[in-house]
Length: 504
Ligand code: NG6
Ligand code: CA
Image (cartoon, rainbow, N blue to C red; front, side, top):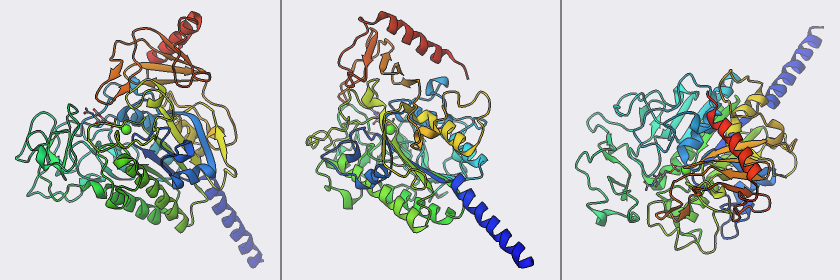
């Protein structure tokens, strides 16, 4: 009798263990930086091969109509994290490296969805959402609030972008390697300290800054940065080691947490400037350092998958791969991206690029794999946004979104995980201006902003007149049909305005 009871108990425990596993897959979001729709071989690139990322698409869902909320980093990340469009909050534009945290601690966030479901949550890589309560902060003491205060249990980040000071890692609340005898100071106002700058000592640079782009303040590791920094010499990163450092943290995180469900947000640095990949990737792509950086990203994705497999958790792990905004060739450094393009099309045939209201600015590669649940390869043309991650994972894990939070995020689990084709009815995107996608149409709000950015050679999509495109018939946005469809323009303008006017 007792043996029978024990047997039943064992079966129950075992089933419960299994059910738990199935209901609570691990989730790894891999967020590339400035990777374009056309930068992956799974999205049609022929001049570069990305086998590890492609492998995710081969056993998962590849989306053709997925969008970042903005064509630059901070607003896209803010939106992915909060489930709100970035224009709902002021101060969500590209942040300097000393900015204060722009997510309120009481705000509901993507990692909080996972925490509520009992997950262990971590962010590793780029942050770019600000740190602390004010711009002035003591980088040698505890730096907070930051990732840990908005939903992560563990963080290993750098503050802003690789081209901005301070060039240091922060683990939880502390700068790694900070020393009291060499205090870290940062300014975006004036030169501090005695160190050479790209402006005064260009002969010290190992990678030249492009004329008129800036990037000529403090030189660190032979690269001129945006902003000035002094001190923290032992804490400074070496660009060639950045990804290996983050990847190492990712591996130990997976190893340590693999017995519990986890959410890992890996914010890759590639192929954002300064592109300074590890020596083993330099010259490997035939496309200059930009291409080499993409190979490094692909390699890292392969390493993450390998570690998940080593730990025996790959089958029950969702991997979502996407990028924060569209591609740019010259974004501040003379690194060969323009000269060595060699027929590669990072823009995937779309118009515009990073910073732009045209599609290349925000149309993103977006791949989801989940071996246990998605059994065959699929391509989905459903309209989805990165803003939907919050509600979708909430739906999957049965976590309710509090009232008045994540108001722009839609639950799309069936579509994300290959069981359905329903997309959003509409989506708003921010660049300098705003655009609305609804069905096959895209409307761009008139704007007096510059039409073209000479520095980056990108069309920004701004125009003083109404713009309407049929993305199904004209994905390159070459024929503005606003004049032929005044009623539709009026309707879309109203829908957009209603969205812009909504309050949190
Ligand atoms: C721009 C920088 C660019 C890059 C970008 C942020 C200049 C002229 N250009 O202002 O180099 O740092 O900001 O990129 O300063 S993002 O992907 O983080 O949005
Ligand atoms: Ca970016």
